Structure formats: structure tokens, C-alpha cells
Length: 74
View: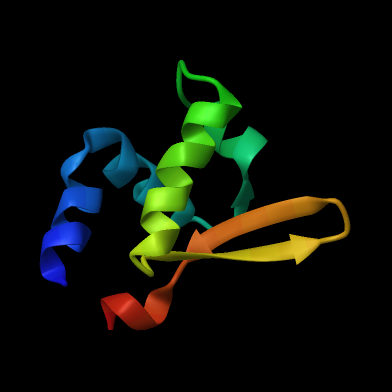
């Protein structure tokens, strides 16, 4: 169980994404603007974090916003 979580946290870019999300919910585009990578690549990293329950997504009309799953860190 923890092995996948540690693997998800092992990539510096995913830790950077979590640090960004500490400030509040953000869309893929918002997150991607902080990195030199495509939105598809950011979506891949978000998917790994979401699969491990570290973040959650919230749909608002045509947009998906990501935020830290605070209950995991409590």
C-alpha cells in the first residue's frame, strides 16, 4: 500500500504539484503554467497522485479542479 504512495511522491514534479495545491484548488492549465511540460504530462502526474488518494478532483461545468486530499495528511 505505502509502496505506491511513496513512488507517487518520489518524483520531484509531483511533490512540486502538491506544494502548488497547498495554496488551493487549481485546474490542469493553472498547474501546467508552472512547469515546462504539456497539460497531458501534468494530467498524467495528477492521475498518479489521485490514484493514491493524495489529491481529489472537483468538476465545475467544463473544468476539473484539483486539490489536496487533506484527510490523507491528517
